Amino acid sequence: MTRRIAIAVAVVLCAAATLAWATITGGYFWPRWVYFGFGTVAAAVFLFGRALRYEGRKRWLALDAAAGGLLVAVDLATWVLSGGGYFWPMWMMLGVSAILTFHYLMYRRPPGRRERELVERVSTLTRSRSGALDRQAAELKRVERDLHDGAQARMVSLALSLGLAGDLLRRDPDAAGRLLEEARTTAVAALDDLRAVMHSIHPPVLADRGLGDAVRALVLDLAVPVTVTGQPPSLLPAAVETAAYFAVAECLSNVVKHSGATMAEVAFVDRGITVTDNGRGGADPMKGSGLRGIAERLEAVDATLAMRSPAGGPTELTIEIPYSTFEIFQKSDASPRSVR
Image (cartoon, rainbow, N blue to C red; front, side, top):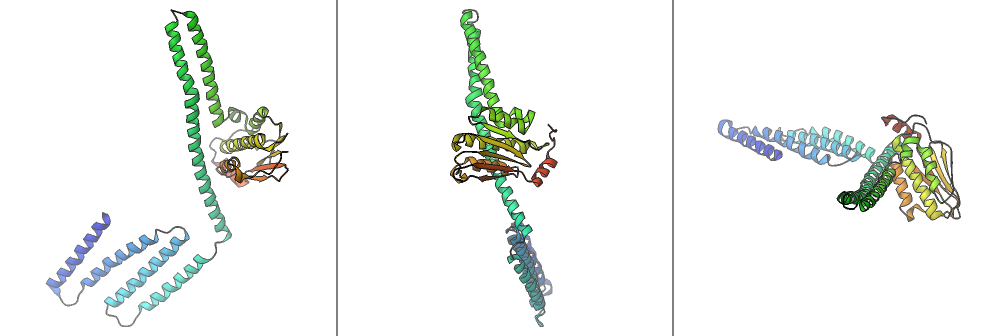
C-alpha cells in the first residue's frame, strides 16, 4: 500500500510539472528533471530491494553492483538530458567496472581458514539448535504421556477409592479399611511414578552429588559389572553435566543390550569421559538411532562423541568437551556449582 501511494504521488507530481510547463512557460522542457529525480529514486528502491534478497557474501556483491549500476545510469541519464556532447560518463563506467571486477574476483576466491571455521561453526550451531528443539519437543511429549498414563491415572484411582471408602465408613468399616489400604498403595505407586518421571528429566543424585557420584549410582543396577575411575572437573555447568550423564547412561545401556560384554569401564579424564567394554565390537552409528541421539545431545553443549569399535572389540566411546566450550559455559552459568 505504501509503495502504491508513493507511485501515485510521483505520477501526480510529474503530471503537475508537465501541466505547469505546458500552460505557463513552454519552450525548454524542464519537467524532464522532475522525471529524472523520481526515476532515480524508483531505480534505487528497485535495485537495492533486489540486492537485499541475497544472503552472505553474495549480498555484498549484489549491493555493490546495485550501487555501481545506479551511478552509471544516473550519469548516462544526466548526459542525455543535458544535450549529449563529450561522453564523460565513460569515466564513471570504467571506475565502476574496475570496482565490480575486483569485488567479483574477491567473491570467487576460496574462503580462508578463518572464514571456513566460522561457516562450519554456524552450520554446527544451526544443526545442534534444531536437534535440541526437536529433542525438547519429544521430551515434553514423553513427560506428558508418562504423567497421563502413570501418575494421573493412579491419582484418579486414588480419588475414587477415597470416595468409596467415605461412603462405606459407617455402613461397612472393614470394607472401608480395605479401600483405604488400597488407596495408600495407589498413592505410593503414584509417588514412584512421579519420581521416575523426575529422574528421567534430571536425576536427584546428579543435582545433589554431582556427575561422578551420579554415574557410580547408575552402574550399580546394571547387569554388566562396570568400573568407574577418576573424577569429573569441578564447577561443571549444569547443562554440560546433564548432557554428559544421559550420554553415559545411553552408552552403558547399549553395552548391556548389544555388546555382549562381560565388563565395562567409565573413566573420567581431562575434559572428557571414556566408556569402554570388552564386547564383540563392530558398532556402527549408522545402523541405529542410539549413538546418533547421543551425538546430537552432546552437540547442544558443544561436546563431541568419538567411537572406536573394531570387529572383535573392544569398543571405546569418548565424550570430549573442548576447553573453549567449557570456559564459555562456565562464564554463562549464572549459578555455578561449588567444588564437591
